[in-house]
Length: 472
Image (cartoon, rainbow, N blue to C red; front, side):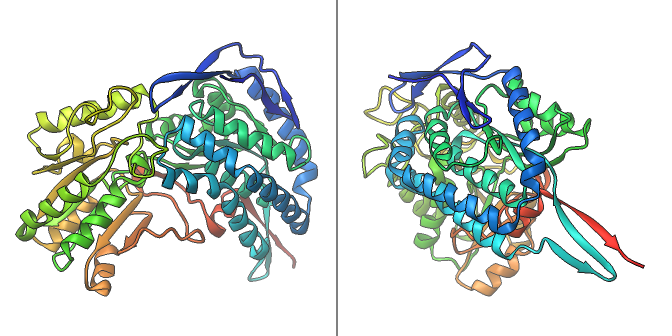
């Protein structure tokens, strides 16, 4: 039984002032495997004060000094990879192939930030003006449950690279992962107050960070609804805000695509991270003239997926994070049937043979109208909508007919033509015949998918403010 009773403030593990205890639930079977004491608003204020006190000295450190600290951070996080993998399997339930990547990514992303920091131009010339890029101050970093450790390390490494100190509010549904990462970061030996980790409810800890006059920057990854609330609250103190929010990403399969190859890539895009991903390509657009062929290929690929025990090597889709998320996905599957979509694979209830745990049948709907709720709203589970189009212009119109704009995938045999089509889609990231992540490229969304960009030089920019010094 796991018992977590401390948070991390000013270089020390401390007992929270908050007295709420939250059960840690294993999504694979719904059992209680531990409990944790949550922080409250008072704890958030203590953490903010520590970060605020540490900022003046840290903001004056050199790039070389920051690189040394990030290298210490990398070594410490790399050393906890095995423990982190165990925590992810237990607490999140990602299949082994995915959870292993999730365990190695936190260290990898620190290295990526180091490489960007080595070449970042903190001093630039603009005509007669010398432009200095200055750290904003205390950064509030709010991370989601679907890749918590990776988000903590990426946001923190980027903030430190810019010269900011940080208060981190991880998801309260990622308590084991947060504990592993916090212990590792403590072993890294960073100066007191540089980072503080306060796990609690968004309505208390998150709100306190958003309201505080001592916090200059918010970097949030999570739901669009929460992002809107943060933006409203942050406006009162003119905080700089980066929001990476929801998505309803299109996968546009062009008429010249090979059906089998396209189906494999499309399903992989839709079911990434068991469908619990903001970038998931859950709207699959296929040409009307080849609809039957693509239906067969996509249905076969969905049927080949295995939803089950995350530790089983054959599992490709793990359980949903908790009962609430399971109920949400079940609700949308029911909505799809009510709205008149045709079920090609999957459906309501748990997969055959699974009576416990928050498992979903990998589900594929066809005859989906772009106005149906399953085609417009983010489900955050393994549910795909197949939409047919008559010609290329209609396909592009359907792809862009969304309030979101985070990611898109275009699949076609003629790569140049696929690129030409992709460049007409309004999304922060457009992939052509690939799902390979480019860490140096900016990541973020259009519309309701967020504000600002992370990754690469754009990520460091987000924690800085330019000052122009002009001499007569």
